[in-house]
Image 1 (cartoon, rainbow, N blue to C red):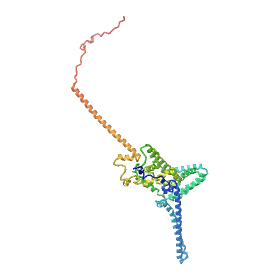
Image 2 (image 1 turned 180 degrees about the vertical axis):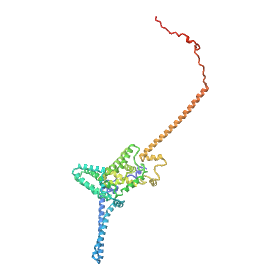
Image 3 (image 1 turned 90 degrees about the vertical axis):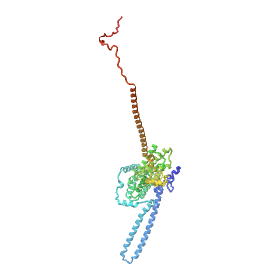
Image 4 (image 1 turned 30 degrees about the horizontal axis):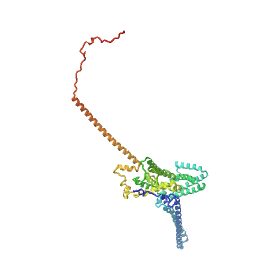
Amino acid sequence: MSQRSERRGIHVDQSELLCKKGCGYYGNAAWQGLCSKCWREEYQRARQRQIQEDWALAEKLQREEEAAYVSSHSSSQTQPPQSHSQPSLATFSKFEEKKTNEKTRKVTTVKKFFSPSSRTAPKKESHEGKTPSPSITRQSSIETDRASQDFLEFLKTLQKPGREIQKQSRAFIDSMGNKKDLSAEELSECVQDFYQGMSDRLLNHYKGSSEKVDRVMDQVEKYIMTRLYKSVFCPETSDDEKKDLATQRRIRALHWVTIQMLCVPVDEEIPEVSDSVVKAITDVIEMDSKRVPRDKLAFITSCSKHIFNAIRVTKNEPASADDFLPTLIYIVLKANPPRLQSNIQYITRFCNPSRLMTGEDGYYFTNLCCAVAFIEKLDAHSLNLSPEDFERYMSGQASPRRQDDPAAWLQSGSLFNPALSQIHQNLSVLSNLEKRQQQVMEGAQSLQTELAEWQDSVAREVQEILERYPLEIKSRASAIDAENVENDRLPPPLQPQVFAG
């Protein structure tokens, strides 16, 4: 099978990451493939059309009510005059009720235009049933206090513009405290309008210096979103939580997908590659611990750089975009990040749009959205499997790792999980040690048997020699003068003497 055919289910043309309007910026699946700028324009146009339609409908209802009133007035002319006011008031009240219902329908209709699967009605009912806390956005925390202090310290360097920025930011945060019942898209619209207005004023002040404007907007975003995080992250008026649970269940069901099925060019047996994979998984999980969209994007960028490093070390050459996306999918499947959909939606709704439209942050975030979309739509064709095998793997009836062969299961599993790889290595070492111990025990038993046989053979040989050559003990020979009993009477022996001449 050729390399091209192996990638047929994962390969994504880089042009597909760009805005469908052809503006050159990165698109986003949450914005129907448009960039933030084009999406806002489409959203504004759709909202204006809906407002015009609502006004036209309201005028039509008003004409019908007026006609009904005229008809009822003409038919009741024979009645006493004092009864005219009651039908008039009842008819006008009914008209106001219908007009109010048509106006409240506007937001839901516009939202359905962009989010077909919206389920805001039950959410709003549950939200209204609760007793909202008036200080939900004012709850102090260490991170909130630190962000406020850092923001004030930064504004001191701006002098006069800093005081105005602080005033507008605080006023915006206070105004958002009264908008908790708005939908997630409407909350996003409020924040994006504030970003746009603040950015325009800063551009006028700094005479078009985009670098200074970006620096100030980064601090504004950090301060605003740290304070609003609890009320706008996964709001009750959205279905983000349901999407999180669905994505987590989907990733758990795909636990059997191996690195070979995705054609991931990564060799985790290499220590540096394994370390980069672990760091990438850690970064995509740690994304959930941050409050500021820019900080969440920083973790996505760090994760992507670790992926590129793992591919580079494995292939000994720079990684390509075709290698990056399947590896990112593999990392997401292994990590199963918490609240993945909520984090993606949070970044999409409340991040400074310039970061998502251009730069490496926007590129890596767009690829992450593509990876999640691929996981949701992953099928047998994408993994080069037959539909029957794919269904059996998804239902748990079978596994691509042979369960009747533990060694083969561990070998294939080691390529999917570094922990299984370490277990496989440890079991291999223990198996070799067991074989060597068995050999040593067999050698020791053999040596013990040989020693016993040698001892018996030596004893037999000694016995045979003793029997062949019996031991004879002869009497001891006596000395020459042994029988002389008068030796004690003999004079002492002569001693040599020296005489002087």
